[in-house]
Image 1 (spheres, helix red, strand yellow):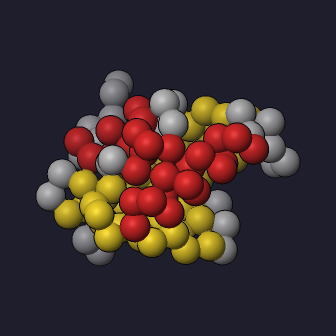
Image 2: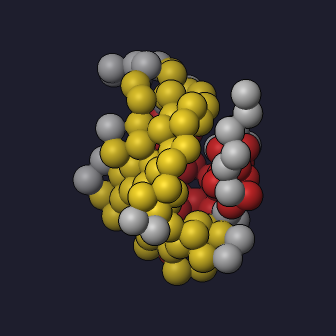
Length: 108
């Protein structure tokens, strides 16, 4: 059964298969991403973050569950690729701003 993801989050997972520019367009202009102990502020930094990750690893990410907690949309996804520890389930904590993602925190 397909997940009922908010449009911005569904767009993010689809864009992840395309590249950094496509991913950055899913975010609000001043969005923040927290991943692997780093913070990326704004679309340019988010574009570079995703481009770097895509250049470093070959992977796929598929959402498996979605929940809503404390004003955040929490998506658990299965990440499979050529990185240490693969496969891994990640929790993506998203705050939406209209049809864009305002913040994303990725928790292993």
